[in-house]
Length: 246
Ligand SMILES: [Zn+2]
Image 1 (tube, rainbow, N blue to C red):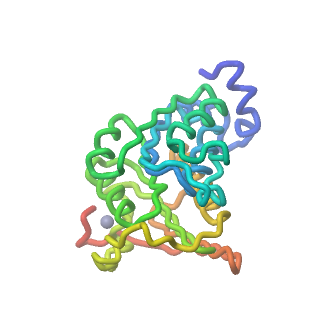
Image 2: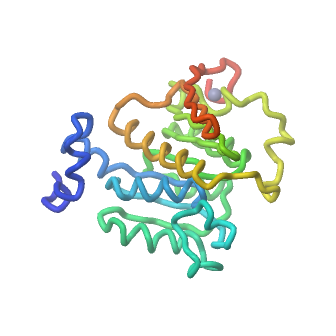
């Protein structure tokens, strides 16, 4: 049951026929593991926490730097040099006290993801490198946990949602990438227009909410976003019989 405060707080989304009080009750129990608290992770966590999910766990090992501020809207100039997860928790807790925020300043690897995965309904990749995206996908498949993965570069982005063993996984779609391309160090900065992760990170939050509510989502679909030409193309994708998810 929603409290009176929750009914007022979420009244505008409760008005949606696709949402309603029932939808809000479902959302308020959703637990999400977020990998990375940067360009994608900023809008992702802000919108998800504002919408009133139950619990958000964030893993990130980075500190705030001046070059982050062009796109990582969780942070500001007073926080340079501080731990991102601590700054994120400060902002997100003040945004919505109803949401439990757990933070871990840890390097993202197989161990840290698996350690904090337990009891979560979703794992969402907000990282900036392919190695982590494939790792998140692998863990999602191994533990049968729903997953959203996005990638961005310059004015361009991609996003897909994975329901393990039921829909195509990230590796079904991107298996042709060479190992050396996946392992390429993330210290080589890619061009990023700040608004690109703003839009794709927001869409990752949208996917979590819609998937939790059983609404149409990006399972078996890859959304290709081109913000230079302003085009959104949805490509149907299918599970590969030779993939790790089969
Ligand atoms: Zn697969």
